[in-house]
Image 1 (cartoon, helix red, strand yellow):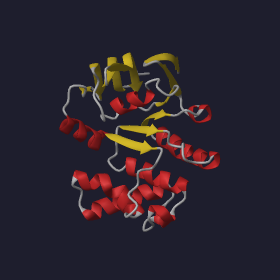
Image 2 (cartoon, helix red, strand yellow):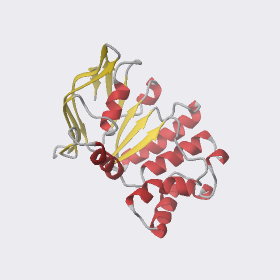
Image 3 (cartoon, rainbow, N blue to C red):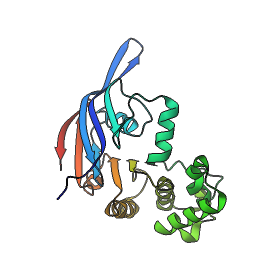
Image 4 (tube, one colour):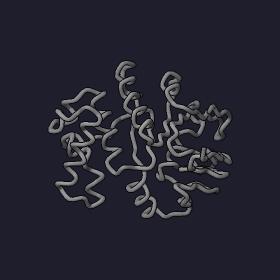
Length: 229
């Protein structure tokens, strides 16, 4: 059987922040390769570097040193405009707080990334309907976030993350604002996406949620200290 393609690769990545006269070493020489189609959880205590790592993977920040390859392309030296283009075309984000726009309907929230990609109205609406159906919200297309439960709002956020058909989905505490039953339903959606071939990297502090992933990284003091595969 052929080896799986590497979709994300970090090589000796460091990230330092200057805070007043102090230098914070958020990441210290992190190297790791994520295979296409993996579902990997990242865990660690507050300050361990997991959120910094997710920001780098999402092209929301750049490393101080080292390299980050996304689909074989070195994005670690890109400027802000180039990173924005990579995020828009290749990465889907799911956040703990959903980040839906309250004035927009479910359909409009899902379509938001497509407006930046220049899709026309009919094509965008068709894509939103397809994704709303995927997350079992077809009958909520014209509702606004305030009219939805927390679990429904997170499913809208998942649908929005899929709008651009991303190579990589990054989930930051995707069940953090949900009760355990609703969180389990959201995880079932993510598991189904993974079964369909999506690469998912998820930060979580909850062991029960991390257990759904097929591999796991544990971080400590800016380094990977344990790997489970």
